[in-house]
Length: 216
Length: 216
DNA sequence: TAGATTGTTAATCGATTAACAATC
DNA sequence: TAGATTGTTAATCGATTAACAATC
Image 1 (cartoon, rainbow over the protein chains, first blue to last red):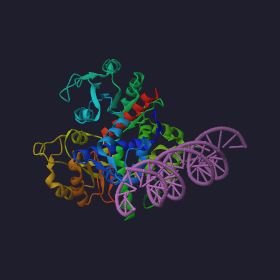
Image 2 (cartoon, chains in turn orange, yellow, purple, cyan; image 1 turned 135 degrees about the vertical axis):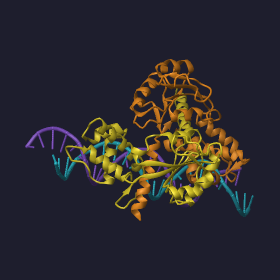
Image 3 (spheres, chains in turn blue, red, purple, green; image 1 turned 90 degrees about the vertical axis):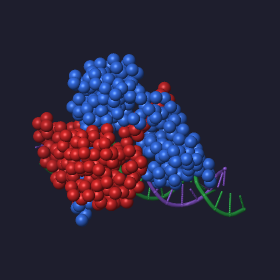
């Protein structure tokens, strides 16, 4: 359970809220005004009972016999996800992946702003991979976090560098980290780390492929 | 549970096997010959009881009082993950992210090979984003999958294109898909889809940041 | 033998699902 | 009122954790 001011929301529910938000925005873009738990669940890839249960942790937003207002439910979920305030991101490690993340255009409309890019390599420092921000030297990590008011960090460094970068980030006061480095970061319990491992995802698929082959 | 020829492995366990494999390879690179469930669990970011329980679904590989042989446990897990045979990948959608994925160098040593890149845009078709493979037109998806023996697909297209691409991929016989598109793909139950949503991960972090702020 | 560590059992915990009373 | 759909309860299911007998 994740304690908030109001209520406790299970971690599994929190992880699905972005799916619901995305599905709601798709419905909104399609001009749909009112939806049902069945329709929204289908668009989100979950069951309708699960959707209703998940929403129940946030409160009670539907009308029995009618369904949910797309606009107001969107606002509720965006609010729960803390997308009211803007989160200021630093991307650390401007290799292939870091560049791709820097160029991703979807941040702003989702409540995020990339305010800093950092890399250790002199060959990359000073370049402007997304046309805008210049890459700053990793040496200045602490100063950059403080000066630019960074509130969240994306680590896209090679594995061996990630632990020390993460420690410096945490020492600078950042408590939310998204890591693409394939290592288990050892950090204090109050730091929230989400980890994305592309090679690991492929390996999970490979497991299923092997299970399929063995079943034949 | 995921049925294999031998046994049933819980999905949560399968998702952790890549972590164990990575930690084992790190230990191996550091010259460690024998490890314990405590040491390996720490390096993998899980508890030792969970590690032993997970391994027990695959068999019995340790020596009581001694621990695990790093080399042979590595082989066991790599084998369970189906990394013996090479998996032939196609990356579809060569934008920022697709390019970064095409340039990622870690595939080969992990049992994967990128054999095709595809994109819909004439401006991209024919280019060689990673120096090697040329991008082929999305039109030829079915032919490319057949000719190159593609066994797994990575979808890095914009959201709206993903569903139709996925349907064509499945119709061509591919049953394992890694998707970076922020949509819930509607596919037959026997298709395994892993989905990575970077914006969603940031939103989950934002939820925790908001909960932290509310608690103060 | 004494010490260490596995593999497994049993207890706990958390998440999902189904069913339905409440109610628009 | 009749039909529809929510919000919630209770049952089920699956995953995690702790403890310890087995055994090197």
